[in-house]
Length: 269
Image (cartoon, rainbow, N blue to C red; front, side):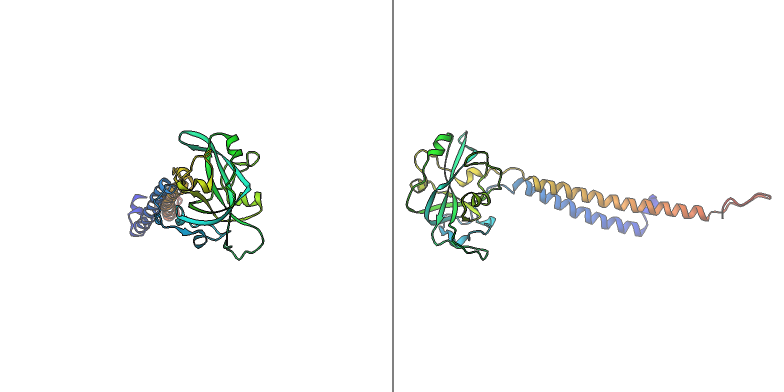
């Protein structure tokens, strides 16, 4: 079988497999790097350039990942009854709640060809507190406001854990709770926006506080998958070589003729 493997045909096949396997290994390395850094926080490419929200995103349209951490300005008013508490958040070594209130946007732009009489609002992270009673009693500022905030990505929905208590800030979930249109983003007010976001009872939350990075499991799985493909390419080449060798051996055996002695029958064809 080794002699067969060194024939031009099988050497060429091995070179092809080697090229494929090398490509798969590089793809695996890329996925490993992506798994390690996909969730990392990157410095905003927009620095402190303030842009009107409606010039960056439209309601009911997903936010592009490159827009994360963009500084935007938006005018409107809070919808006090549209408030939820997000449990399991950490800040300065304390575990507690984010207070999130929907902010009705003036002159909102609906995307996806939608139209209607529903309000268009975006979730605002008004602040953090370790105390649930404080979180429930905190009231959103009334009246019209112009808010300056950083945009962050919306989170995946998870089942609610109590009365207006959730585990994630998901616009897909909030629009069902409050019957509004929303943006595919959430807002983190700037530190000097306390008067427009909360009161002294809540601590300010920055966008980076919720971006902890860490390993991306899906990318890690893809990395392993590419290595499996690389190994499988070598296995297929070896399996085809083995089958060819067995066929060759079988054919040689079929064509072998034993020279007979006087009175002896042929043992082969």
